[in-house]
Each structure stands twice: as structure tokens, then as C-alpha cells.
Image 1 (tube, rainbow over the protein chains, first blue to last red):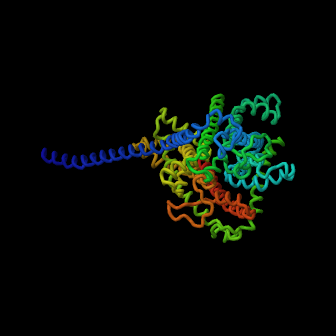
Image 2: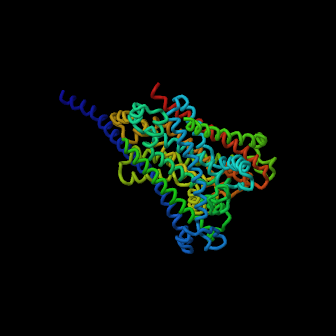
Image 3: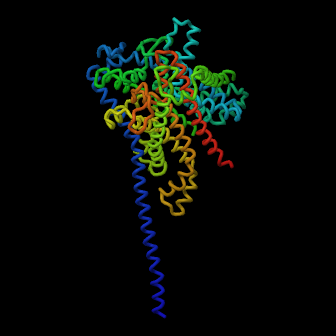
Length: 322
Length: 272
């Protein structure tokens, strides 16, 4: 009896031990798999850090040769840009002014249209209309920049030439490029400002309505001021987009470095200069080739700075109402 | 109120004018031959087969590289990472990369991939790797949003049944987040297809009369071919450019449509 009891215990125990072993092995395998996966995922995440490091190292190291010949001060304050003629003519202001001229036009257009659309969509439009209009406007952001360039050159510029006279308006000009770019950036401004306006507490609106304010007064005197920092941030981010945009200005704004405030003239932006030279016009290692990295570095610093400020303003604004 | 309506109307009219402008200029040049022929110096014979092939290669390789890296980064940040300083830095860094101008990516790709990795080879792989870096922030941010939208209770249920972190991600979070990720990935790829500034820097070819056959082939893409034709001395090429724009827009708008469709289907699901 006792013996058979022991027997049955051992026969029962054997498969259990096996099972335990198998479970333990499987658990170990799963843990190894998890550990391997988490290392791989971490490496994937680090690629973004390597990208930033790569950009900074590339721009700084490659422009070092340029700044050995031209001082930072002369680069930033010089008003003559013709580095293919001589290193003395390496004042980037002509390119910066061209860039800013287009960006300001684009900023004004996108802010006016984007903000107006945001107010209409968030304060006036019925839900059904909003659901139709929003995707239509968002198509604007998905159209490639070469197509906008084509539109600016073949449609917008001829209109201005008819309006102001062909001798007043250069075929390649900052105004057409800026307006079309503003159209492209409009959905971004509209979405960001709508987010800001939706975040304004209901109670502020209700209080104004209770005082007898009209819908227009609530929109312009309550919601807009309360959402002002969000709107400012969307403008800053829009300008940063405009400064970094390349193909529209390359196609429609010209290739003429020009220190001017007249948007009807032909200009050249920093981005258009970079693609013009890197597209194969200058020999690698030549002084002219080095200039694109100096211009690229300045472009990177400008857009990065504006993005950081823009997002900082948005995050501060969010805190205010949370 | 009129002013606010006007803003929307101008936006919609601007879009309509752009489409009509392209159609009016491009339709006379559009035909089946236009899609199946290679580029030519004669406007009547020019087609887009070469750049269309290049665009497909770029889209496919960019998807191949950017989906695992982008989705992997998002999973790491949302499911594996602690709120450490390094991980906050990664997240901040991705937000900043999203705002870096595309020409800068072009310069980086030229130096890192064309000159360093491929020793001067201006090939489709170099182009796709550059595009991968460019669209990676879009893929990561969209995937993060999709992962965040998976209810915590699903995860808790899986953990309660003894699943480990990777098992929860693999069998619960990823299937649930898939539609949201897909729409983000499609938008990222349509960005890669429409972008031309970095490719202009990387591929210096003007006329391409072949479809790339392997990852080491040189190439051009549709937007770059359009750019070249817009700038051609012979003004007849403008019409050819418009016809090519029609093809590019048809591809991109249908991709956007699919992305919006997936998103709306996905968003409406909880109400069912």
C-alpha cells in the first residue's frame, strides 16, 4: 500500500517537473525575446538623436572652412552676395532679406486666411459643414511644393502682370511665391489656431453671451484674445515653415540675390541658393561649395529657434487653461 | 462673419484655381503614351515612365526603412521607455526634427549616404534613406498618437493574464493601433513622394530614360522631372509638366483619401 502510494506520487511528479521545466524555459525565452526587442526599439529611437547630431556636425564642420575665410560678422552683416566672384562678397543679408520677404508675405496670407477659417469653423459653422470643409482645406497641405511653384509661375504671376503692368512685375517675384506659399501653409495655421480657440473654456463664452454679446463679439473680443498666444505660436510656426520652403521659391521667386522690400522684384532665398549650388554648379571643395553649408547652418538655426519658441508659447498657453 | 466665410472661400477657390490651371494646361498633353514613354527632348514624345519608376522605388524603399524604425521608436517611447531625461530628449528631438527644412536633409543625405556610404553613388537607396530621415518624425508622431489611443484597460487585461510587456505590445497594442498608424504612414509616404528638394540635391540627373532596376540604380522622381520641365527653355514643356502634375496629384490625392478614410473609419468605431 505504502509502496504503491510512493509509486503513484513519483509517476505524478515526473510529468509535473517536466512541465515546470518547460514553463521556466519558455519564460526565460520570452524574457530574452523581450530584452532583445527592447534593445532594438531603443536603437530605433536613437536614430533620431543620431540624425540631429549628424545635421549639426555636418553643418558646423563643413562651414568651418567658409568661416576660416569669412568672419561670422561679415557673413551676417554684409550686403553683397556673390561668393563665386570673391570671398569678400559673402554677405548673406541679400539672401536673408529675400527669404524674409517671401516668408512675411506667406505669413500674412496664411494668418489672415487660416485664422478666418479657424474662427468660421470653430465658432460659426454647423458640424456637418465643418466636416466637409476641413478635409477640403487640408488637401491644400498635401499638394507637393513643385505644384505650388507651377501655380505661382503660370497662374498668379500673369494676374499680377496684368494688374500692375508687365514692366513692374518680374516673371520671377517674391509676391506670387509668398501668396501661394501662404495658401499652402493656411491649413496648418487654421488647425493650430482652432486648437487654441477650442481650448478657451466654455465659461468665458457663456459669460459674454450672458452679457448680451453677439457671436461676432464673442469670437473677436473674447475667444481671440484668450487664444492669442496660441495664434501667435501658429504664426511663428508658419513663418518657420515658409523660411524652410524650397521648391516654390526656386521655381517662382527667381535666382537673383537682391536686398529689396519690393515684393514685385526677383529675389533669391537661402533655400533656393542651397539647391542651386548643390545641384551641381560648383565643384566640391571649392569656396562656393562651402558657402552652402554656412547658409544651411544659418537656415537651420533660424528655423530651429522659431520652432522652439513656437512650441514653448503653445505649451505655456495650454498650462494656462488646464 | 462675412470675413471669416471669405477666408474659407478663398482657400477653397485657391485650391480650385490650382486644379483647373493644371487640368487646362496638362490635359492636351495627357495620353497613355505619356505614361508609358521615356523623357525626350521633343515635347511631343516626352513621357514620365522613368521618373514614375523612380518614384515607386523611392516610395517602396522609404516604406521599408521608415516603418520599422518609426513604429519601433513610437513603441519604445510609449510602451517601454521610462520618463527619464534621455527619453524626454528623444521626444523633444523628434518634434524639432519635424521642423527642419527639407534642403537640410538633402545636404545630410548627400554627405552621409551619397558621399560616405555609397562613395559617390547617387542611387535610389541613398534617396530613400534621405527620405526616411525626412518622414521619420511624421511616422513616429502618428504612431505615438495611435498607441496612446489604445485604452489602458486592454493592456491591464493582458498583463493580468500574465503577458509580459512585449507580448502585450505585440498581441494587444499593435493590432489595436494599426489603423491609426497606417493612416500616418500613408501620409508620410505621400510626403516622400511629393518632396523634391532633397532629391534635387542628391540626384543630379536631368533626363532619365530608364526605370531603376535595382537598389543601386541612379534615378529621378516625378516631382523632380516636373521641376526640370517647368524650367525648360522650350515653353511647350510647361504643358508636359502640367500633365505630369496631373499624374502626381492623382496618386497623392488618392493616397490622402485612403488615409482620411482609414482615419474616419477608425474614429467612428467606438460608437458602433
